[in-house]
Length: 196
Image (cartoon, rainbow, N blue to C red):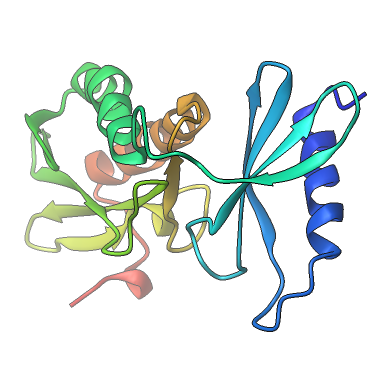
């Protein structure tokens, strides 16, 4: 019985290790509950998008490769829905104005901006995105959201076609609420990570 996301990920990774690919091995990129099966996306290390999908039968543990039919909501649809229903309302609660990709937080002393950007390599199956944070002031700065957050370096979030986005949105909002907003309000940022 494969009854947890971790067990499903381990089963898929074990199965992936048996594949002999001339151009490298594959890793589990994402796992989601699909009713009687676990759904997983697998791809090559160092890439953010998956090359194929895998199913794990919860009752038997049998792993099968599959193809994601390009019907239903795409990863871009999932990304836009996550932004519209979760991220933008939370940004508004934090005091940001704006729309689309650019949101502004006006403080008593200066203005901070968060600009979202998507990877050029996005596909129907996966969307990778990040954000730049900047402060417009005499000692202004710009940095990637990941570098000033709990991720501690350039970080790109991924959304997969047909997969839930709750965890992605929660992690993104933690980075913004707990790290970007205090950095903007206090104009605190490690100068070594500034961009010209």
